[in-house]
Image (tube, rainbow, N blue to C red; front, top):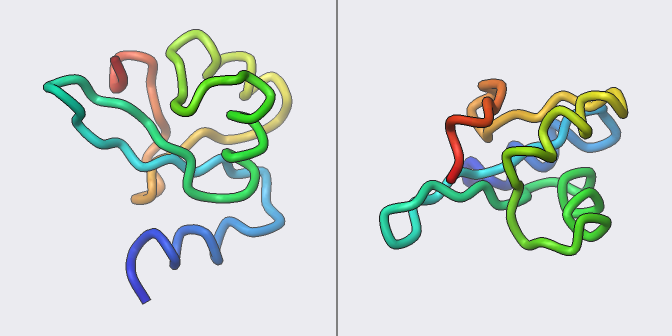
Length: 78
């Protein structure tokens, strides 16, 4: 089982929105990994997490984390 599959299984049914940060053309972008993060991105209409969405997602009671379990801060994504 790879790291992304593990993150998806561990976070299933929790208040965790899990993202994988990938560098695309020198810019760090956060892609959804689990169902919660995918649903949030569906609501925003964007494929990746935006800096200004992090605080709003937290207000809904979710933790916004990387696949490594690290809290995502706005300065971590472009």
